[in-house]
Length: 151
Image 1 (tube, rainbow, N blue to C red):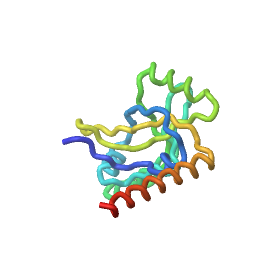
Image 2: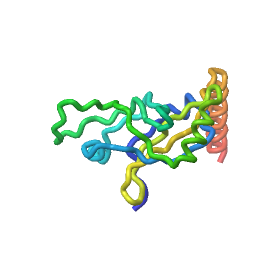
Image 3: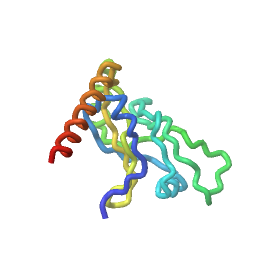
Image 4: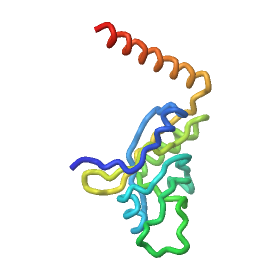
């Protein structure tokens, strides 16, 4: 069956340098699971923060499920991420370094149909790094085009 990707944070790869990735479970309400299965999620501008040594996903937008009745539902409320204690301690040590943040890269359902979040331990790119990366990408594209036209 494989994994079903619900939402990806494509801008994260442009704005951040991903140092490491890990998988975390996410605590959801019943209606939120149905909304995720329908594909109503956005990771734009979301990040993970620590509150009393627990990790929370902040600013992740999961739109309300259309058939659900929830008049006081907040689509961007903080959702608890489920990790082992040793992983939490490692992450806490990583983000204590200057300039390192935890960014969700994608939300998906694994083979057992459980909602998971792929987290990236990221460092913010500087403008010069972004420009050089775009320049390298353009050069690669041009060389592929030249090779293709010379055949």
